[in-house]
Amino acid sequence: MNRSDVIEYVAQDNNITKKRAEEIVIMILDLMKEAVVNGEKVQITGFGTFEVRERQPRTGRNPRTNEEVKIEAYRKPIFRPSNRLKEIVNSSEDI
Image (tube, rainbow, N blue to C red; front, side, top):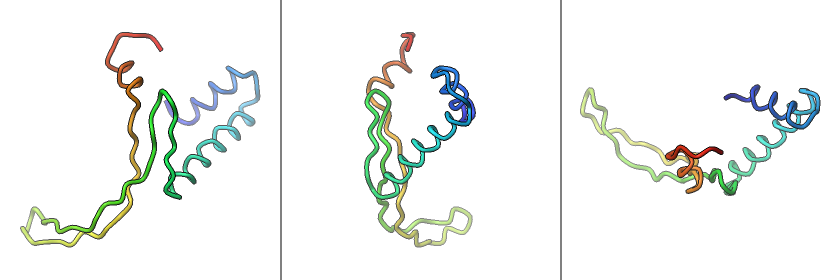
């Protein structure tokens, strides 16, 4: 499933135009993206949590040359599925 599929589903399920559905879907995704970029958690009950984790600087190793390489600190977006989503994925239960 991709963004176009979501837009089409929202349009059909809510009896609205695809254009309006696209505006709604993009608005929600932009809101979530902005929150995560600003360091906020986006928690969707029954689905999961989107957040940013800070990675500390560290020393890595180039596998070809075995030379040490300095890896700078960076922020990494992550998704943690909810326990309910994990249960559904690992069972034959219908959504």
